[in-house]
Length: 219
Image (cartoon, rainbow, N blue to C red):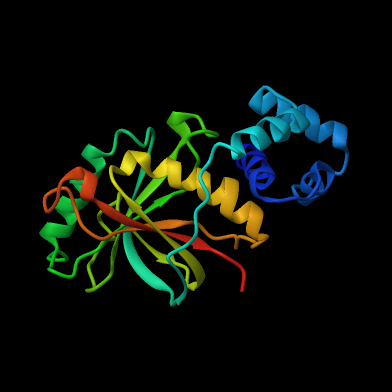
């Protein structure tokens, strides 16, 4: 229920459909039931939220993707972090120890992350964040209960470039959802957005950190 309602809130940010259409897609065929559930979850009714977000949208700078590209499926080793996106140092260190121990680290190594939730919507303790590395070699992970194998889905992606501290990535997401997706009428695919880090804090100053944000879009 929580994830379903959070998805409807995100749809209100990017879709020009009316609230009734969004509610029906989420399985609410009675507007009153949707309004009640939405207000219980977020403290405002859907029409109030949509109106307030329309005002917020005017504050977000316009943004355009660096490119549109088609990607193949990619198999990755991944570790799930649950909790505040600001508290990633320990899980990131743990994951990089796994990478180093299993000789995945090379000059071509790339770190990927998948932020499943929006911290402006989801409570901090319920946030989900995956830290990933490409499966460049086969590793026996059956006895490592905190590492899983998963697929980052291929398909068409709009790719945006972010420079600066990772904690400021939320700003680029606000522009992607609040202006670019809304104004372009492009539809999202139902797969997670992911991030690809092009350098790291040991190579460059934090203000020079580069990350690409891959937004899955319909063909």
